[in-house]
Amino acid sequence: MKAFACIALLLLGAAAPILAAGKPKPLPVCTAHFYLQTGIVGQTTQNQPRVLGLLPVPPSGVTGTPAYMLHPLYGQLSMGPSAHPTLFNVVLDYPQSQPPVMLITRSSNLASVKPVVWHTEKVKGFQGKIGLRYSVVVSLAVHYSSGTARLPLLITLPSTDPSNLNAAAEKDAIVYMPDYMRKGELTLGGKTYTAMLYDEYCRGDFETPANPLFSGTWLLIDVNHNGIIDPRGETYDAHKPFNIGGVTYRLRVLGPSGRKVEVLPSAVSVPQILPPPILTPGHLAPAFTATDMAGKTVQFPQDYRGRYVLLYFWGSWCGDCSQQNPYMVQAWKQYHSKGLDVLGISIDYANSASQVTADMQKLGMQWPNIYDGKLWQAQLAQLYFIRLIPTPLLVDGTTGRIVAARDELLHQNLAATLQRILKNKP
Image (cartoon, rainbow, N blue to C red; front, side, top):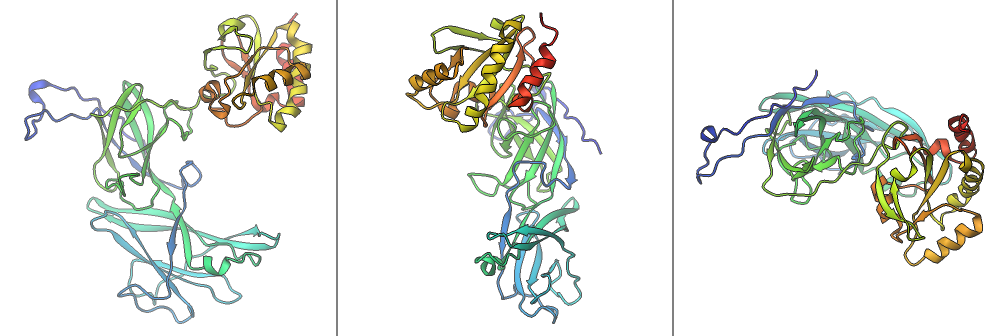
């Protein structure tokens, strides 16, 4: 079901509610319903598994362990409102020469509970021996004042790897993570964004923060509308202020189930963190002004109107770059007269400018190069969110748009891509 778009509210002075202290209560910027979405494992970079330790002693009140479980281990999962959680009993046994047996239930009497049905996967162990990994998605009925929600968890057991010396100790735990999130839309500053609440701590309580450092719930907002949630600029602690479009907001979750939220103005300002640019063909390459190693000011892309330019993120220390460099030199020699320029951007250490210059001269890299000695914190590496080198990008200097991305420009692909794009150049 499609989430309702948020409704902007106007602050009407006389109609504004009054707090006991006499100050007007801030009205929501928008409100939204967030709907339960399941089967989401792998859709977010925030997948951090939780571990439930198991003991050979059953929790208080638990009875009726099946006789076929000879060495049962017990644990309890707590999910739902922190004040009134739903408890689920977990029992695990490893029968000799047979698959593990696990029960998970709200019932305190385990006698009639059916075991889960495992999905098995072969895995290679430390010494190359093949073991099995067991996993299962279980749907847990969690109670809220507004009703019951079925929240699926992905539960995994450590692999039965005969070469793993820690295997015996690892059998005393299960690993689990949420296979659900709440999804809706937020309208902020006149723009509508897809947004999600992700319960990383797997508590089933989106409203109550787990601790002051991190609430346990992520607010994920697709700021650049590319359908992907980036870890930078689109991932926020749901209970801390966040800045979108230069305005700082705070989220209020109306109830532990996370079904309804409000966005309010924040009394505390935080800086805006922009998401990474989209570095695929058709998108604009971020513009910048910088000074190259010869002291010349470079205005990108204005300085390259009527030409194509290869932005080349590289490092003099980088072994993979040393393999890419000859292809870049050959491309410059073959196509420079046909409208191709190269602009190097060094991901290099401090105090290594002389080494960078020497390497460029030795290799015949006759194009301008920008170097600030900040390695991965280099200004342009941060602007382009570069996390891997070599990274070449081919940009149309007239439009400023990317026409070919990294994989199309590595090694032998570089010549083929340039021939295709520049074949009609005089």
